[in-house]
Image 1 (tube, rainbow, N blue to C red):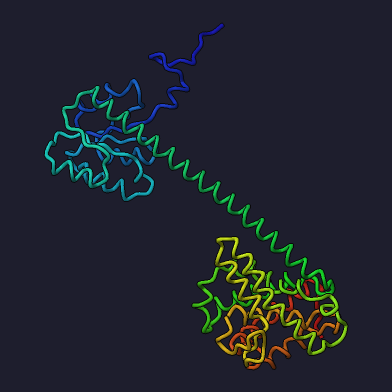
Image 2 (cartoon, rainbow, N blue to C red):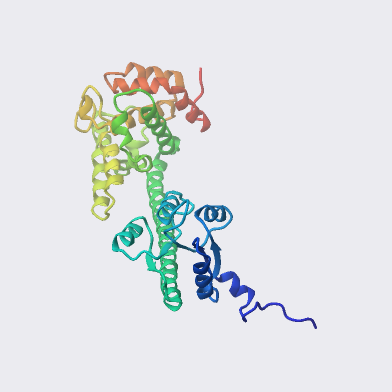
Amino acid sequence: MGADNRYTKGGGSKVEETKRKTIFMVDDNLTNLTVGKSALIDKYKVFTIPSGKKLFEMLDKATPDMILLDIEMPDMDGFEIIGILKKDPKTAEIPVIFLTARSDSGSELEGLSLGAIDYISKPFSPPLLLKRIEVHMLVEKQKHELEDYNHNLQHMVAEKTKTVIDLQNAILKTVAELVECRDDVTGGHIERTQNYLRILVNALLTDENKYKEEVSGWNLEFLLQSSQLHDVGKIAIKDCILQKPAKLTPEEFDEMKTHTTFGLKVIEKIQENTAEATFLEYAKIFASTHHEKWDGSGYPHGLAGDAIPLKGRLMAIADVYDALISERPYKKPLTHEAAVDIIKCGSGSHFDPELVKIFLAHEQDFNNVAMSTGRTESN
């Protein structure tokens, strides 16, 4: 059997050798390099480098775990070298210890201010040099472990947050669908109005309009998810009213109107048991204001113009468009073109004129959403 070649000179295994930390020692004095390497070679991979120029050539090929750097060298001194190292993202995190014959406090302060982690005066005691390097290597190891821990913790928190948000959205979607399924001919209304809202909001963020600054401060994910609750109050409306295949009486219409105020109460009840304010504030606005009209003739509060929250004005267009192109117990669906004409005619009365302009500029996108679900056909 051949000799076992797994061991290197000095009894250390190749595996142990690869685990050794690497140190670049930079000094123009050969004696200093020899003494320093001799003190460290049993525990570290040590590369001796005679100048700053050679150091940067080496750094193009390998990244050490630490650099021991002399200050007084020809062509490029240690202060200049560390300045270059710290400006380069690839080398900025390499710990640097100055080894120098300078012993004045001013030089030490300057070195530490430039980013060195220690300042050791020459001539140095080899055991003391070794011990101080061990301490700094341990600190660096713990720093990286803490960074890894924080990264993993952030990843875990992000995953947990996503799980909670997914659960929240699933519950909201289920509640919204529960309300929607009571009138199955309008199925898909929630999803389509979300898509219409996305079209309008994205247009407000890109097209020239007076609402761009306000909309840029919204959380789009929260906005779209919360819009699912705009009709949640219909859960309190009787089936004989929701599914009536004829025009509602004034008394029945008054009851239908209450879905806005009841929806607000439902969301406020949820809000009492959660710390999530932004999401539910969006939902409250959608539920309570999407039937308000620009001229003040809407419900439940008869708000007019800019007194109606912008989110409610946006939902009014999305909601009415989908109602027009959808079959309901009391009507047949209208074509996309007919729905567009009705919204255009409602500019300044039912709808915010500025938002109608945005809608008209992107009405084909609305049609694409509707046609993708088989909801409408063009004339």
